[in-house]
Image (cartoon, rainbow, N blue to C red; front, side):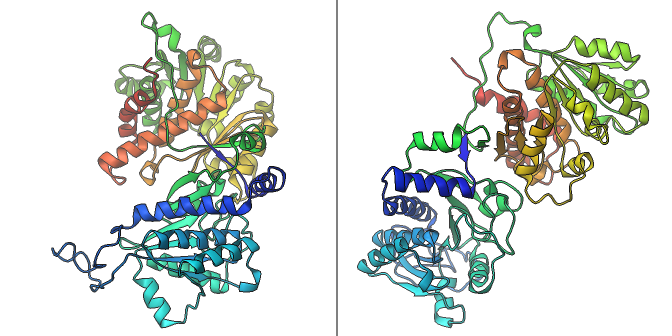
Length: 538
């Protein structure tokens, strides 16, 4: 897991590192610039420098695009620098690229009088190697023509401190970089794409759409949330010399720490050779209604495919024949008396309530009664969440773990908040703490928050998952993990891992089938392959 830090946390972390630990700020800036320069070099198509920059054809073959052929002796990169320390990172990166044989022009966006001392120091080093920090002049035709022929651009205009909409020359620089971006020009942003709120992912008027964002020391929440996620492109977190112990003290070990699950393996225990099905959890799913027979089947299939030993599926009697035909491994049964349902639920290790359940008054009463009487972990999804609207006291009265999985619309109905939710991370954490539950707020960069204020941001998934049924697959996966006692751990961490695995299954589907044609059933089929990658083999 990657640590994530807000703008305020990063400001304090930098202060402690520089003022109390004696780490020179220029050393931190140099390390940040090195990480950016390395990423640019990896993206440039012809480095080390070749003989020509050919746009119209490739190696003398067929035309690659409609742009005219442009002869150049070196690969070319434009570096856009603001007057703050983020701009200093860009100036230093420009120097490092020049030293690697790249043709670089660095442009100061904004007022030279506002340049920080560190950026001025980096400008002196840039001048010493033959570079220059020249004013950004969007009306200068020669400058614009040169920029438009670049193969890469570095966005170092704003750092994490941006809090108001961009305007003026800053907006013009962002718009120019976005026009540049394409198959022949890649954009690398320093720390956060300029125009993105580092804490919330909100777009402050307009933002750079980067191919890669190199985030320093810790990831920033805004790189995964809202529109900030698509703007960030691929996120790489670079260590720049702040001690790991200091990061743990100030960020990772705080009760309200935020972590990102993006890439990597999160190990599941290897199963004992002598194990039997009862050791891997008994889960009950209460789902479905007339017109919604696919939801219970998808949830049950996901639970089976993610390792639950026994999966019971309770559905209304009128749809039981239809659902029963869809199930092979799960065990469906028609719902009867409340006492019978409660007894069945109490015999299980975890219960999922809600997918496709409907909003009939008697159904909502069933949900509320179960939440009051059941002392087992519950995953509450879809209409299970809707049943809580106006009855939040029922959630507050529970002592066993409760995981809620709303999308923004369901969260709005539950809380009365305004849409769109401007700060989804804070909203999720505040709700989880206030109601002593685990909240999985679904969407781009799904947030999993626990009752202590800790949160997890998800870095997997794609737009192909935006189809009816995807949430049912997630709910079935979550109840399966929650019911497998041998997994242990905090319910919020298990839920966050479930979200991560769910997104990975979606990513595998997108790679294999494409985002248009992939289905939730395809995701269920990919779940075993995803989980296999995370099992401890020893």
